Image (cartoon, rainbow, N blue to C red):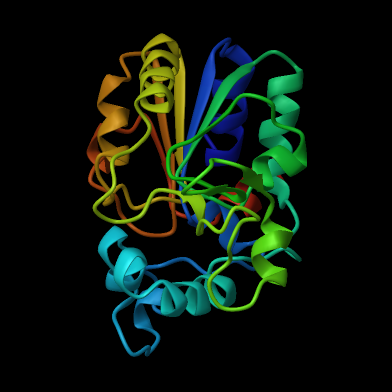
Length: 237
């Protein structure tokens, strides 16, 4: 059977689909991923991106962190692609129960998805480290150097940096959603980032689908494996 038809059939008979996605979901919207040949990790900076995007670097070199963050992590012109749109459609039809994402761009919500579990936070939420006041992403972009709140405190993005723990509540909800799913679709992720990638081990449903342009460590466990761009595939189902 044609793989797109096979995926369509799996979706048709599923009642509780959970989607687990990574950077590859947003590359078709023009947002570069971290680990591909053209990704952030292969571009030259004064420090390695892994170091810049760490809690220690944020604390010690806050202005340099924000120079990188504004230029390389915020893409407000990006629009949802076919993958984001199809997932929102499946949720509105009552077939998809949750989107579990490693992305911080907010494109799933922009496409209309409601139950989005953002494992690594969001560029659209920023908080004062002193008083806790919320600031939107425009506040970060419009500020110069280190953004400060009215109270004088430094404003920090609500994104999970290296050395920081994932949100326990979000993790718990993700485990519950994946555990209860009858179908898990993994897309646009190499499953190399932990602890996020470990969540897929909680799936014990009927169909495991993996859609990615490169191999993942779960390929041998997949009921359906598609080596392609997820937006391209989702546009056909």
